[in-house]
Each structure stands twice: as structure tokens, then as C-alpha cells.
Image 1 (spheres, rainbow, N blue to C red):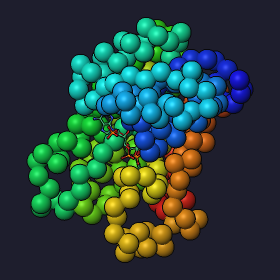
Image 2 (cartoon, rainbow, N blue to C red):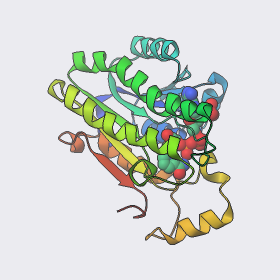
Image 3 (cartoon, rainbow, N blue to C red):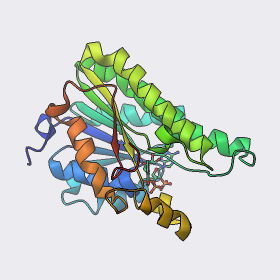
Image 4 (tube, rainbow, N blue to C red):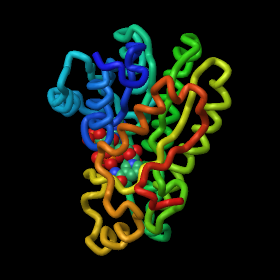
Length: 250
Ligand code: NAP
């Protein structure tokens, strides 16, 4: 087993939205580091397919939950706690976009994005906090976005949800710090996944011009930041938002 980061603690790391995109890359990467990983997603079949791509699938277990449904999250966390020796970390990654200019954004589009991105992050944090507090250790890593820091036309709902995550991160950090639990956020810039695949060419070209490092991010570009937040090296860091975006937002 690799001694990478805090993997030698052998506590399980939970990753939500782990069947594709950034969540899948994080789950497989952390499992390769030696962490037992609990992959969470809406479809067990999709999770199992992603798990099948791992170098050591035995290190990964899959749990079905729609993170916007409180009862799903409670059941998944109960099952994870029953299966795991200890919980080291929670990566709140699952998220969606429902874009539209604010005048045309429907109340349903607004609510759906808030329900998944912000309330789902709250549900998972709420469910896992008692155990981490009892353990007197734990790392919560929330995936926000540079859009939550800078805003973006057509994404008022998404920006609000991601800014909410930054503020929630600070509040949770203050609440749980006394019990040895840290809570930090990662704010990715433009990462090539299904979420960004449909953007018009003009938007992509303009965006590329605004990235000092002159390329879009790959899912693998986020693993180092998450790995760091889970590692002993980040033991005295909490309430922070680390921007990982090739320099786009400064
Ligand atoms: P993605 O490829 O669209 O994947 C989203 C993941 O979230 C999928 O596994 C999806 O599952 C899951 N998910 C969605 N709604 C869910 C729900 N209600 N319950 C459980 N799982 C749910 O997106 P991504 O690009 O990897 O994004 C991952 C995270 O990074 C998101 O929070 C996103 O906002 C953030 N982010 C992405 C970028 C970027 O440029 N890509 C930039 C900044 C931040 P299904 O397959 O079942 O839909």
C-alpha cells in the first residue's frame, strides 16, 4: 500500500458523485493511494462500472443515494459506517448545472441546483459529523467552484450554490474544529468533463484566453489538492477555499 498522504490511517474516504467525472477520478485516485473508498452515486450499476476501472476494486465499496434526498443520505451513511473501520474523510463532490439567464431561470431550475449542490452537501456533512466528532478526527472537503467566487452570467443558481458551499465550509470548520475535524473547500476552474462538454466553441475559446496556464483542467488536476487536504500535511488548515484553476480567478 502506498504511504501517500494520510492513506496509512486506513480510514475510509467517502466520495459523492463518484460514478463519472471529477468524482470518479478522485475515488479511483484515492483508492490507488491506499484509502478504502466509499463511492456514492444515484445508480449502483454506474458506480460498479466505475469501480471496475480501479487498479484494486476490492478497496472500494459502492452505495446508492440521491444526495438531495435526506433519507437516502442517512441510509447511505449508516451503511458506510457499518462497513468501515473508521471514516477518514468526506469529499462532497456531486453537483449539477441548470443554466439560464436570471430572467428566464425557472423556479424549478433554481431549486434543483440548490437542492443538489448546497443541500446535498449539507445533508452529507450533517450525517457524518457526529461520527467524526466522536472519533475526534475527520476531513471534510467540499467541491465548490470558481463560479462561486467570481459569478458567471447564466449561472446565478449554480454560483449561489457554490458560494453557499464556501460559507458553509467556514461555518462547519468553526463548529467542528474543537473536535479535530477540518473542513475545507476546493474551487476548481474549467475542468473537461460531461458538465463542460456542451459549451459553445466561442465560450471555450474566450475562456482559454483567460487561463494563464493556457489549458483547461483535466479531472486528474484536482486529485493533488484533495489528497493534500486529506493528508497529515493539512492538519492545521481549516475553513479555507483552495482555487485550482490554472490561474483564471485571482
Ligand atoms: P459531471 O461529470 O456532470 O458529474 C456529476 C456527478 O454528480 C455524477 O456522478 C452525477 O451522477 C452526480 N450527481 C448529480 N446529481 C446527483 C444527485 N442528486 N445525487 C447523487 N449524485 C449526483 O460533473 P463534474 O464536472 O465531474 O463535477 C463534479 C463537481 O465538480 C460538481 O460539484 C461540479 O459543480 C464541480 N465543478 C466542476 C467543474 C468543471 O469544470 N467540470 C468546475 C468547478 C466545479 P449521475 O451520473 O447519476 O448524474
